[in-house]
Amino acid sequence: MTGAVLQIEDLRVRIPVPGGRWVGAVDGVTLAVGSGEIVGLVGESGCGKSTLGGAVMGLLPGGSEVSGRVLLDEEDLRGLTDEQYRRIRGDDIALVSQDPASSLDPTFSVGAQVAEAIRNHRDVSRRAARERAVELLGIVGIPDPRARYADPPHRFSGGMKQRVVIAAALANDPAVLIADEPTTALDVTIQAQILHLLRDLTVRSGTGVLLITHDLGVVAQVCDRVAVMYAGQVVEQGTVRDLFARPLHPYTRALLDSQPAAHHRSGDLPVIPGRVPDLTEPPAGCRFASRCAHVHDRCATAPPVIGMPNGGQVACWLHQAVTEEVR
Amino acid sequence: MTMTMASGARRSRSAVAALPRSARIGALILVVLVVVAVLAPLLAPHDPNAIDSSRVLGAPDLGHPFGSDALGRDVLSRTIYAFRTSLAIVFGAVAVASLIALPLGTLAGYFGGWVDQVISRPLDMLLVLPALLLAISLIAIVGPGSLVAALAIALIYLPILARVQRASSLVVSQSGFVEGGRARGWSSAAVLRRHVIPNALGPLLVQAAILAGFAVQIEAALSFLGLGTQPPTASLGLMLSEGRDVLTQAPWVEIFPGLAIAVIVLAFNLLGDGLRRHLDPQGVVS
Image (cartoon, each protein chain N blue to C red):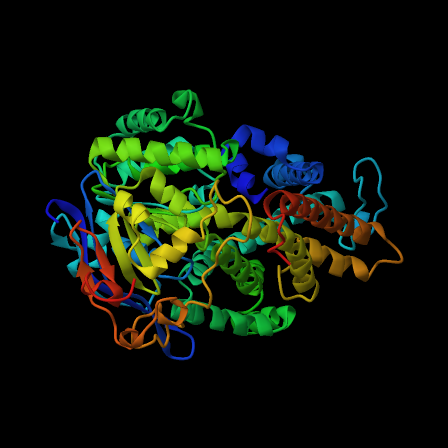
């Protein structure tokens, strides 16, 4: 797609584990995030979605091997030195992480942490940074920001802390924001507020957001497009509307089926049988084959990524030729 | 509660009031002792080294409230000056040990891996040696004296303090705000300075305060053995050593410096315990 602020091409990440083995946590992911667009990255725990976020931020565990390209405004981040990468972090790419309670340093006032985020990248006076920080705190919805500027984080609730974290992340108007489960630690009403805040701010500033989550409800609320990840690979991506209305990959379908919904009056919630394959020795063919209800002979070889007429993509033999058998 | 600790420390006025009472009492005693030590020349009624053959082992009276020793020297004056020597040795030793332990422990805890190995293994080797043996060996090489005694104490304390700092910075390094700091583009140096050290400092301060109490005793022990402060300079341990010979005839020569040691140790322990409850509720300090 054109105008993508973040473009990930055939990204592969291998992380060493004890015993001299490697986990292929991300295996050939291609993904793009446009300006002002929110792309959801969903998948269950351990599917590699946070590793993908870490790879974009350049913050992976030591010894990890990365290949492929990560383009930020068409510049490949993989070619940067550590120092160049450091300068980009918090400036052009920012991160909002899962736990607002621990993302703020208890020894600094919340305002100082936002102001320092600015001064780390911009040559501005303390006073100007402070003014900007107060303004940002106001923008993210902290009531009476000037008075709360000097408060330490423990005087804030979880939702308010996450607002401060968002203020710090957006302080330098990043091109891309990685939001790694930003609302998981918050209760549901606060979740919705934070998500809508995130959406308002990023759409207005043209920041592209990669929203990492395991919660399809979150995706449905705020995302424009969505990529479904399974065992280190993106198995399906498309617009939220298409994907929710007509899921193509059996895994996506199973995920949607296992969401609790208001109309499920009774009966057990369907679950996906089996377990995620061991990524130190991934299966040769389709990685979902062992759990798939539609598995057949061809699944022993890895499926191609098939472009659909509506712009979506799916990695499954079932859709190789839409006219063919099955279904 | 750890979350609130250092933010309290940053607000200097409320910090003292927020400390437990024992810590405040300990700090108060220490302040008084430091004032006494600093103002020793003004407070001491006599020259601590002035020998007066007419007052050998003189009992306490109005002019000499603590009596006088085997050379007729005023015990009160000598005790006041001995405070000075002993406190200087203790503060110096603990300060030197803490200042070296802080960067070593912080780097070992934050970076881990080979950095940790290079820093921690030699310190572990120091830790294996019995404290007094280590001190005596150093003094055997360099020769006795107040400065050497202070260095010996610092050498004993360095591995202990570095381990405490390593443990607490290891914990802090794994917290979200350190990761967040990196994600905001801080350099390692900035993350260490802004996030790790301020948050990991509490246990080190607690351990230093507790160890300072013991340092008084180590200094006294070394001087008692003739390996620390050398006569005629007054130090508490040395006075104990001198007083032991005349304990039956003139107990005041022994009692007052002994009491002085007890007061210093008590003050440091009160401060240390109070600080521990305030700064290290999870018990990193053993």
